[in-house]
Amino acid sequence: MLLKEFIERTGFTPTEECFNLHINPAYMKSELEKDEWCKIWKKSDGLALAYQWQVDFDKAQIANQKAEIQEISKAQAVFAEDQTEMTVFLIEQAEKWAATDLREKAIEIMGAKEYITYKIDHGMNLWQVDKELIVELLNQ
Image 1 (tube, rainbow, N blue to C red):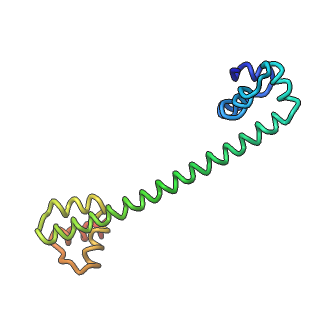
Image 2 (spheres, rainbow, N blue to C red):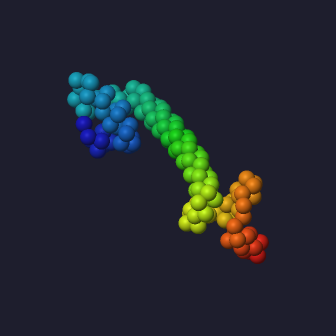
């Protein structure tokens, strides 16, 4: 039976999910003709069961979305941690090799204030460009 046919026979408009996953499979299991099946469906608890199925389906969808959001949040946290470790590595390599390009990349990733804070907190030497950056940050 098609969704349109079901609606015409019952006057009830289910969601496509409810029809395809709940109502139509029940109809397909029966040996009744469409009109007779729909008549029985209306007189029995069909409507209440369809509503309950939809509520349960929606709850399951919400639970799945929440689980997906949690997984994304975990992945973002891991990414942020990896990014922090990579930025620290860039700062340390810039310090070790006096590499201004690595310094600039670290500032681009973590921001100027955090870069300067990290260097001061870890007792690293402040280059002349770092001192100029501090003055620039103070003047903002």
